[in-house]
Image 1: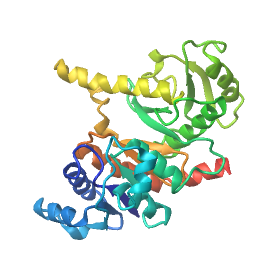
Image 2 (image 1 turned 90 degrees about the vertical axis):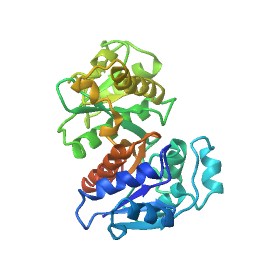
Image 3 (image 1 turned 120 degrees about the vertical axis):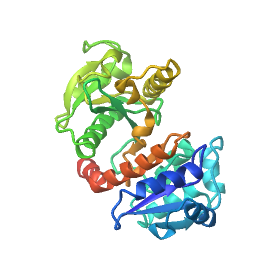
Image 4 (image 1 turned 45 degrees about the vertical axis):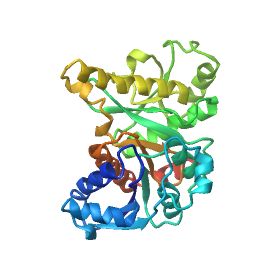
Length: 312
């Protein structure tokens, strides 16, 4: 197994990414290798300075970086030696089994679609995020930003993708699917939700439990929560602020501590032909470590094959 990691992506790279990779490597068996993609010389020097062994890692030299503010498509075309482009080249050619980066989100989405591409039958891949539950465990919310405007057929596919991920990667059998809406009744909502509802209701592949409201997100009512990317991103950013607010108010609470994105690593792109994970731009070493371990879980679950078997 080879887990690709962009060490130039993120606001605190490469220090944060290298430190995170070192911590992740400590818990991986020898046959599971982390491939560090970035400035090879600088990476090896820093690993030695930190007292780790460069022999424990594989390296791919990619000296260029796509900045957070760069236009994704233009940057990918103009920067073939960037860590994100090289990472996707490796993934496309089967030289790594997964690719993760805390770099430019748009570039990661474009790179995934241009290189490994969407699984045949998928209208649009989605980005998913973990949602802490009050009684323990996590649910999954998608889409959280890849598709601001959606069609009902896309939300139906998101429900399938989310169900497959939470069952095979997170280990929740027969996950309950809820449609994020402004009311519980079937006829409530806008044009998108009212036309999506019957698709989910009649989909025999899903354990659909109906509409859920914002107050239901952190309960056990649903395991997979489906919405368009605009709505999902608003929910995600608000939820992330819970942890920040509690820390500023000096409130210590186990539940709100679980809103700390560091615990989950990154957000997977669901619906492409290989495991791809996008990390938060301000990811510290702990988040990078968990992003690597999340990549391993996706590889070991054969999650991509599960998607292909459903959509092909």
